[in-house]
Amino acid sequence: MSLHPDPVSRSVAAASESPADGTRELLWDRMHAIASALGAFRYRFNSEAVLHQGMAAALTDASIAFEHEFVAGPKDRFDFWIDEGIVVECKIKGSFAQAAQQVSRYAERTDVTGIILASTRPWAGAIPEVIAGKPLLAIKLAVAF
Image (cartoon, rainbow, N blue to C red):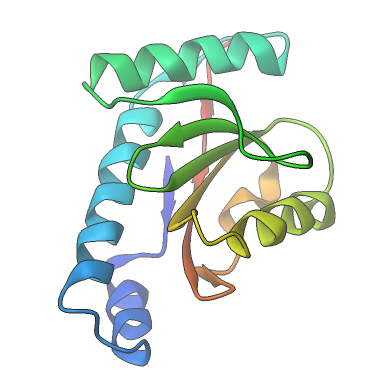
């Protein structure tokens, strides 16, 4: 499992942002807890829908409340919505550019506080840690064969 940013880059990013009385640090901690729950599983799937079922089980097992396929507006449907404003977006197909475009659009929303991009794609570990001022965390999901 690959989690980004690592603790060193996370503290550098936090230092470069305006302090919001620890709120940003609490958000990173919550996002890392969600990412750890998702990253603890090995997923076996043949479609994104089946992967979503496994991710939902991982979140449920970790007692993380979520809404699946949350419709946030005419253009936006989040794979998973966590009450604190955290979006979990899953990508098993497509390019980095396509994922970046979608994640950028989500980051522009005022109701989104952070984004976790969960993917099986090789580029999952090479994304920025902040997008439009919002924390972005990448998880490379482990696939069971």
